Length: 328
Image (tube, rainbow, N blue to C red; front, side, top):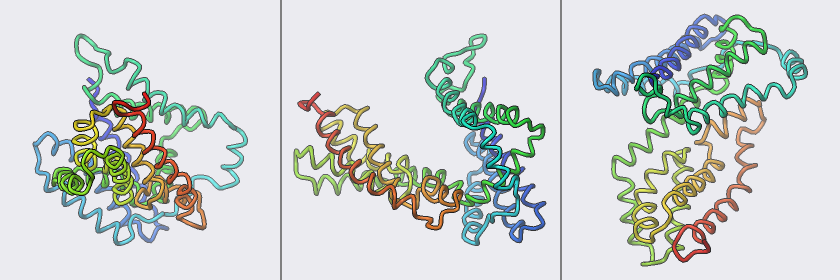
C-alpha cells in the first residue's frame, strides 16, 4: 500500500537538502539561520508521523513550530545567493521550448485528477488497496510532482537532481517563511473550531439574525466566510468556523438547503476574501515577490474589483438556487 506519509517524508527530505544547500552558500550572510529554518521544517515533516501515530510527544513538534516562528520574526530564511540561470538564459530557454513548458505544469493537475477521480483509488493488489484509504488526492499530488520533475529533467536534458534542488532553493529564497503560511493558517482554523469559536459565532448570529430570514442568513454565511478568510488568509481555515456557526445549523438543518451546493459556494465566498488579503501570502505576496513587482500589494489592488462583485453574485446565486422554493 502506498501511504501518504511517504510523500510527507519526501517533502522533509527536500527541505533538508535545501538546508544543506543554504548552509554551503558562503555568500549568504544569513546562511546559518536560513539553514536552521529549513532543517527544523524538515524535522517537523518526519517527526509529525510519530506524533500522528501517538508514538512520540507532540510537545517536541510544538517547540519546533515556535522556533520556526522566532526565526521568521528574526528575518529568516533569507534569499541566499543561489542563481541557477541568468535572465538572458531563461529568455532563451523560453523561446526554445515555447508552449511545451506548459506540459510540465499540466502534468500535475492531470495526474492528481487521475488518482482522485479516475479510478486509481479503487485499485487493489492481492486484495489490498494500492493507495491509503481517503488519501488518493494527496498521494496523487505527490506522485504528479515526481512525474513532472522527471519529465522536466528529460525535457531539459538535466542529469543531476541537484539542479532541481538549487532551483528549489532559489524559489524558496524568494518566498521565505510565507512558504509554510498555508499550513499555519489551516492549523489556526482547526484550533478555532476545537476552541468552540464556531459555536460562539453561532450563538451571536442566532441572536442578531431576524427569525426565519433566509436572505440574512445567506448574507451572514457568505460575508462571514469572506471576513474570516481576510483574517486568517485561508478559506479552508474559515470554513469549519462559519459552517459550524451558520452553514450547518441554519442553512442546511433549519432552511433545508442543498448541503453540497451551499458548502461549495461558501468556499467560493471565502476565496473572494482570499483575493483581498495579504494573509493569503502564497496567492498575493509570493507572486509579487517572484515577479519582483514594485508594489508588493499590486495583485491585491488588481483583484479587489473582481472579488466584491463576485461575492455579491455568490450571495444571490446561493439564495436563489440552493433552497426549497427557489428557482430550481
